[in-house]
Length: 179
Image 1 (cartoon, rainbow, N blue to C red):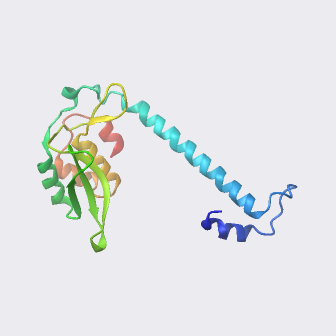
Image 2 (cartoon, one colour):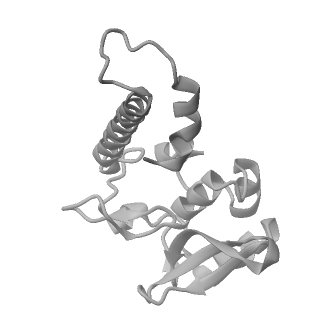
Image 3 (cartoon, rainbow, N blue to C red):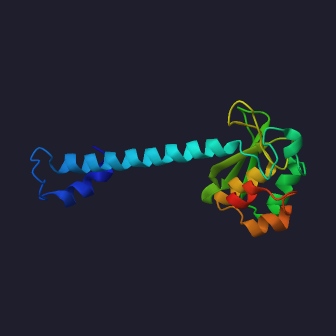
């Protein structure tokens, strides 16, 4: 029995069981917890499926599987890091040991700890991510996608991103939806 359910079990003691005498407090609380977890899992699976379906939808009429259509304004990883440091100084960049073509971005926490936020491509990055045709996996992560991930982590806001990196090269539906 998970320890965090003990308070709920204590609060549930003595409650009537609606005609099911074998369903005591611990079982009732555990059953309720499991039902909530199943519902949460179903909702997460549905959301992931919806994201997968939308992964290949054209962005403002440009196919996400063609690199030339997604290149926009390319940017070197060093320039991207330089601009990010203008906005916030609590980021740490580190080359990935598992994927040498990636740079991991961490948030510096109090006492020198660091929290992984996302990864970006080392070298030249297109403005928008390029997807593999046969699967929803990103082949080349675009720097706007990295900005969106950092915004979701609360590292910077949309206004700061636009001030530092400019507006998208074209009217990107992805950028509008995610920011």
